[in-house]
Length: 329
Image (cartoon, rainbow, N blue to C red; front, side, top):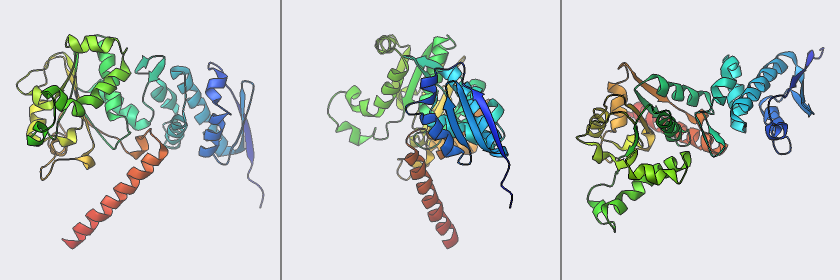
């Protein structure tokens, strides 16, 4: 049997810091080879050579070109970028991969904040195009982080006058009263992740001033009752822990010139014997105009690769349990 014809192609690595692009000990080459095992890659000076089966080389060449575009736009690339671009090329969306993943939302201390997967890019675009967006998915998919980046961007561009960050305090009943300290001390554990997130997006010296003058507000969900929130970017985090009544209350706070992003993971609800407001809202509001439901998956996790495999394993287990329940009934 005759060997499959091979193709050799070269890509000029221009417009980037070559050392940073290739990474320590040419880490980028290792990442490309992991995604394209049939293709050999060799970098010399500003030229990357690819050799292997014709179709495999053509796909790999497109991946390299789009990864290069990511680096030109954002200043850096990661293993996640290579994986995401490869998947987009395989799915026929490769022509837009570089711009989709490289377009920064904002820059924080010299580092760009941007979508790193196709799912994250769709989520960010949905926030731009809709007044209310629900972002659901497992931990590590960037739901809150990207929403926070869009909020800071909107504030910097004067599209809104303030940012409001809120989340339900699940323990806000009797047990919260047993905690020591003032009310602020009691609710701090529930709101600390939001403080940390906004602090990572802005100059640390600026954040206290914006909190003090009300430009940034971080408060429990219960504090939203009775208000109309105008000209604000409002983020409700951990929405799976809202009751249906709380979710309705929150959504109806929307005022003129405002935008809302609701984030949560429906598999992580901590409400005992109650329906999740997030799940109920997804059933009731799915077809309402100017609202969008973005579903992020394990493919969008940008933490350690093992996290995605853990999520997949739990999802498969829960599906088997549900199937057994359905069969028994």
